Length: 232
Image (cartoon, rainbow, N blue to C red; front, side):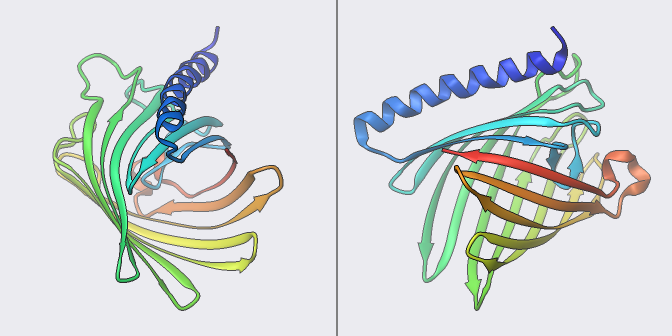
């Protein structure tokens, strides 16, 4: 069995297990839950290509209650340190104050398959502020870790995103972000693209990603990525 198939089976098992627990909670407390499956021409993370130019499959499940939420996300990846997947376990709280959306989260990020001796599990703290200004929806994100992947220590990701509806089913968005890191690469990343809702709970996102860090390697170069997502 090839590595890609192993990754798909591993992620599917995680999603099914977490999904079963989510359904059980939902049955007991009538809390909403959501589930997504996706396939993309590449897996992207913090503006970088993380699947060695290969397609990636992903899945996520989330349960919410009174503003609090817990989620599990997994995607196949292919990183230089041997990682063949990325798994994010998140707990957080969402609310709205005076028309501004607030989202605070703690994220455990794990990269299975990473070669021995490389730190591949770390915690991130993230805050999102979102607000609609006329026809434009905005989001400001701050993501911080005290001890990141491999040799990276303290790191920050600060991002500003804006979006506007083109019609009832189509939305255009653009984002720019700055990455600073102690012991890791520092760069500015941006993306621009269009996402369209399709029949049968499907959506298609077509997006251009790029950074100013081409000198760091191929994963920092510009690329066009298509992603198809099923939401349940």
